[in-house]
Image 1 (cartoon, one colour):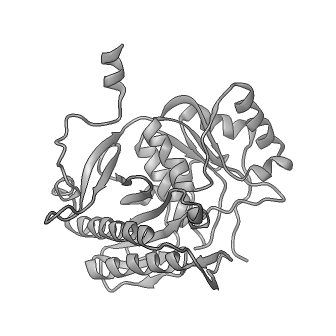
Image 2 (cartoon, rainbow, N blue to C red; image 1 turned 90 degrees about the vertical axis):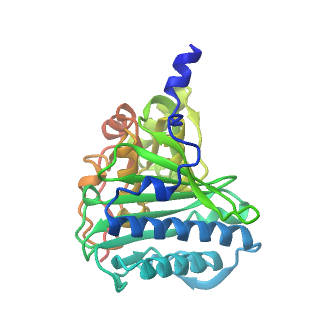
Image 3 (cartoon, helix red, strand yellow; image 1 turned 60 degrees about the vertical axis):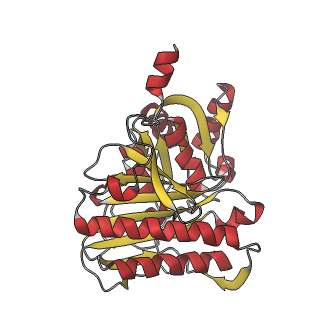
Length: 329
């Protein structure tokens, strides 16, 4: 039993403990390698910003989605844009804070990102994160998740980690940020392979207000409770989805309802996470089809979503089903 438990762990013990992100990407496409290293550098900088900003202040402004902007939102947004411009391999970038396609002056890839997902709970010291999707080519409008070159999700918690998925690499891969010590600079070190999200009784239910007038969602939550599933939910999409990769089981959902429509953005949040979950051995759905097959027709397009193990996501499809996505008018 001990041997089997060790075989089932997602930590890749065959890898050297000091394999860095530079080592991992040594055979990658050179342009993509530059973009990915830029995102890792930006996330390391954001980790410092989050920890060095004692007061998360409302700036008196809102982004185009109507969300209040905090000082850390703006700092993190600027950090990513700068790194993407400087790498020379990004043609277009778009942030949830600035949901337009911005020219970056480079050539090769386009990047959509949420600089600080979960900033509404950062004041309580909950974990927050950064989500980035990287597509080949000069545009973001009209892309699908299945066309992604890579997805990067950083979690700023007790540890700072990044989960990385690449089109031409199997599985999802976790890197941990080792802080600078003495003369040694900080470094991203390979820490885990996430290969299979199996069936298991763990659920993270977003938008619970929707259970009041989405009958299927209400029945699904009752099913989970009756069958004694474990509830693990913080209200931040990054830790709530990333836990599925670490625990290798479970489901995250954020359905829509007439009174509580879906809020998650396809381009900036849902598609990158769907790409990551699929690479980690799970699946995704909007209640009808894979998230990876949805065309991003508008920058602010929103959708309901289920991410996790195949059986749990199929149960979502059967009990909750499809809801029309939000589109800009």
